[in-house]
Length: 93
Image 1 (cartoon, rainbow, N blue to C red):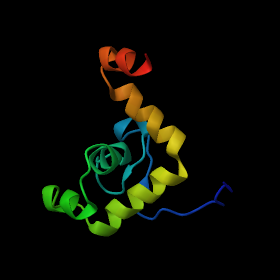
Image 2 (cartoon, rainbow, N blue to C red):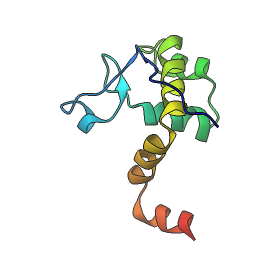
Image 3 (tube, helix red, strand yellow):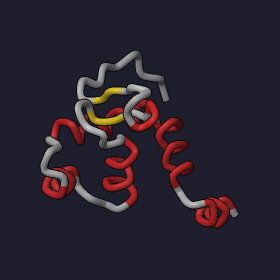
């Protein structure tokens, strides 16, 4: 699969002072990894996410998912690190 060129994600930011430098939705402390977990791991549609977290917009959620697909390895690693060690051990068996 060809690698994407540098793609701008206007709704995503990274600052060391916010969530330890993890990618978040700009202007919030809502991590991209959380959007991914809700959408891809728990099966929530983007519309459901914005209904649940009313400060997010649909454009922000879709940009977070786009960012994930451009940086899948990084975000998957962040998700793994957030799991309790017992869950990590079970998943790696």
